[in-house]
Image 1: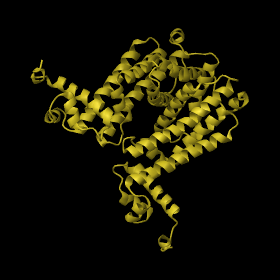
Image 2: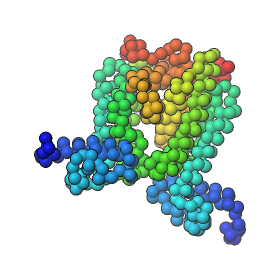
Image 3: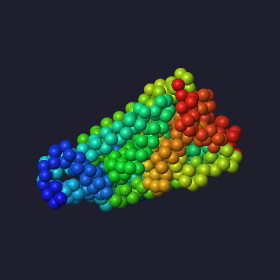
Image 4: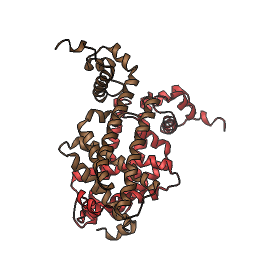
Length: 219
Length: 219
């Protein structure tokens, strides 16, 4: 077994191993404090080899961001694609998101807690990833509302508003999840769907929140 | 008029002027690229004087974070304190938040876009500010729901969940606002109250979102 490391490992496999190690170290230390030495050691290869595959610490971080964003979006899309109605698609998508965060904690820390300020390249990559997620969710919100109200449609602006609210809520709820490890991804999804989806449906059926209404029903 | 700058300015006044300038520069350049030279120039005083008042770039940034967090929380509390019912208090609080973001764009950029990773001191300050905001909103959600349903109360865990969802949604919606400068803070608040509050009220009255329900009403 001791000569396993010496066998030639195909480049793509080696790269994935380095990215796996890098995610653990970036999540644990943060971008600035993370050292390529520690990443190389965890990946079981030499530091010059790490630089040969991914040419800088920034390059390493970008590779981590790209792979994990793709995984997260793919998980969301796959889950959302299976369900029959748009509303169920959003539910499945949210469930896939909370499952990803639970099962890939280190990946999520890298995606969630890192600054958009680390470098222009990283900022651009983060903004791009965020836009991709927003577009997915906005598409589901638009289609979902149309479906459940027999024709009423959110326009693009409104769907984008809903997507921002949903993505922001889900994003911040991962902090809540960290303090409630007993809560399953399914329960998280049900709680959030309860909070926003029932409301949106009722709004489209004519129930509108107004300050006046609140004033009269308040105890 | 030309000797105005030479007059002795009380220390607290001078500090506020430096913080005003620092917020503009941090918002424009980001923490790492911001230079104390530019801040000093914008404040109209010498760089050594800046260091005399606030001893480092990190100290400057912390002073900005502290002052603006206090302003935002104070605006939220003042608005929320005036309204009669808890539901109206949340509405007023959200309105104060969106108004703050509109009127103090540079302050918001500093609070919103900065990394929690810049330094341990900054991370601690950001976490502390976030906790303060969450506690305010959780308190309103807890009280508001109790009030509007004649006794049904959210427990602490549920109120904290709602607060995370609301704060995350509002936070991310500021990106949407940036692309829709025509939208007033009042409209932002109504949209968000519509999306979440009507839903929460209905949930407590017995309407619960379930996957089954969506499946049967879809299409």
